[in-house]
Length: 103
Image (tube, rainbow, N blue to C red):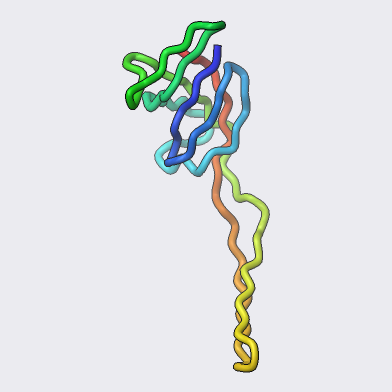
């Protein structure tokens, strides 16, 4: 059984036991469980429930393993012939979650 869920504006295909890096779940702490009701599709074998826009009664349970930051990306801006150069760095926060149940 698998499902497609929407978390923080992004869609993920999940199965029980999967580990995912999702955008940071600010309201949850490490070790806590989170229930996601925003299920767009739920499939088992050849049978699939497609939501319009969501599947009624479907739910995915996640266990928050840890919070962290992704690798740093460099943003470089330059305007030629104007002596303008700027370098910025950014690290996107994420939450590492494990799917415990797809209902």
